Length: 280
Image 1 (tube, rainbow, N blue to C red):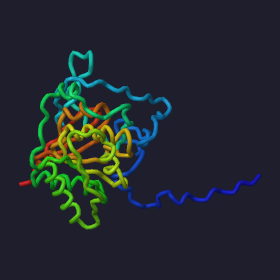
Image 2 (tube, one colour):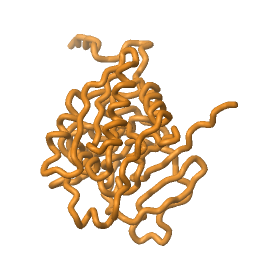
Image 3 (tube, rainbow, N blue to C red):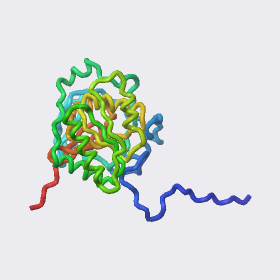
Image 4 (tube, rainbow, N blue to C red):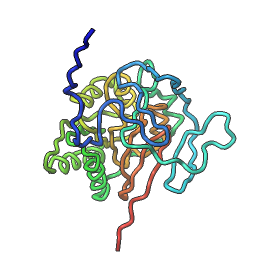
């Protein structure tokens, strides 16, 4: 029996074409064992052969181990006499995808849960160096269409609008939408759907931690939003935000610090890196 050869898949990349840094869906395997076969957003967990679903870890007190490349804020592991290991490992390649955390039910943060953390730091006004560093990171990631989100405090609103103006002024760059939200809401589904609509190349967030934690929960439950394609201002670099959002919810989120440095979330730890030194 003679078989007719299958036609070439028109969707396959052409030889010599450049791959963008920011991509949607599973990514190729990277260093340090970062796998590429995690589930796409909105689909049930389907581990590859030999891989097990990561167990959700309960929120715990936070400690600050130190390492040669940066500092890390990590939830302490229950039953461990030394919470966290010294020397936080740097994060893997951009876009490494984390499985959707199992968090059924409401994304709302209740009074009892909030009382554990005490007062949360309010966003501070952004600086020009912070804005320039954020634009630089997205430019390096080859993002073009960006959706901007912010809470309704004055500092977050000003930061979001400043980024939207700076990004829209660049050739070939587009801000698809600017979405805002309150700190408390009866339902987070509407802002979540608005923020995830259109699947932009990246998201930029300027927000206070309480509202963003609840919105991030809903985004992970109900939309195709990917934290690994999301960049934040310095206001999001708070360890309490990770425990408010829950294990795995913000895995891959990254951003910049007020002095132009950067930070990333990996393995439920917030790791910061200093700004590069300016040559004399």
